[in-house]
Length: 90
Image 1 (cartoon, rainbow, N blue to C red):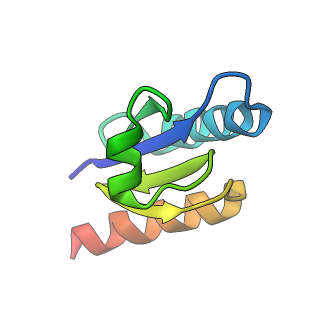
Image 2 (image 1 turned 90 degrees about the vertical axis):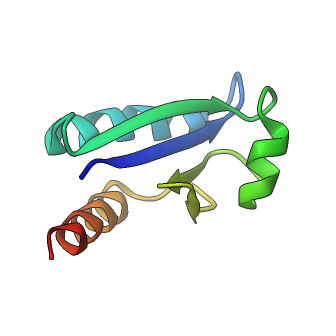
């Protein structure tokens, strides 16, 4: 089963750029068949973001649920993805 990650960002947000870069590398390490992601422009999809509880960028949702309301460390993100993938296997 593939995990779907959404990173909520705004143009010109340097923290958002770091979140995307970190997510790209981590998703690549897990493999495209395990982790897919998309960048969600908070300004373009404000209603959707608010429905998930996103208040500030960068935020990350996993499988449609807000998991990180601020930029997670690479370790935090890797651990969360590994935990979810392991749970899906059992």
